[in-house]
Image 1: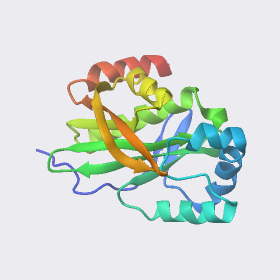
Image 2 (image 1 turned 90 degrees about the vertical axis):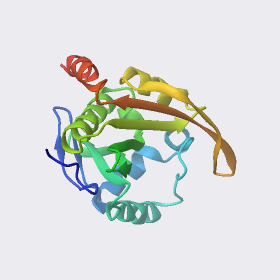
Image 3 (image 1 turned 30 degrees about the horizontal axis):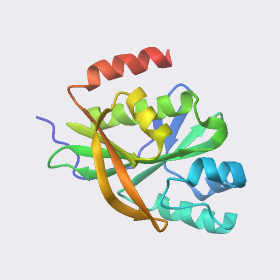
Length: 197
């Protein structure tokens, strides 16, 4: 019987509309321009533990650090030839075959488009087929209604609220937990494929 990999491993995942690949510092100009400025910053960074950055140079340095990370394993989300966001596989537990999808963000122009649906489809398929996941998790700030709605739309099940889970940017964060099991995946996979078609 095939064993789950012992660690997360960088790779490139190809979809119809998006490609997920390891991030590189050259992604920084597009991503910085698309996520900084009053409206963009509010839309992207409100519920993240990081961002926005005071200048592109510091953001570029952050991208380079993400590229060197093993867990979280970062992907740049490329659409129409340019980077439009990032996502990770993280908190990998090979003994229990559990992994989380996290740190998911996009420039405002890519939000509420096919980009997120195909990105999450590619990551889920990778988790269940290559990592033999029994469970894939999604967590977000409980106040982040858009992320919570996306999790449900993408086939995750709501599992509860971890109250006073973290302090983020000086404020309390309650965390909403969602999960998907390998038993859920065939039906979810079929539904997401139909949406993407």
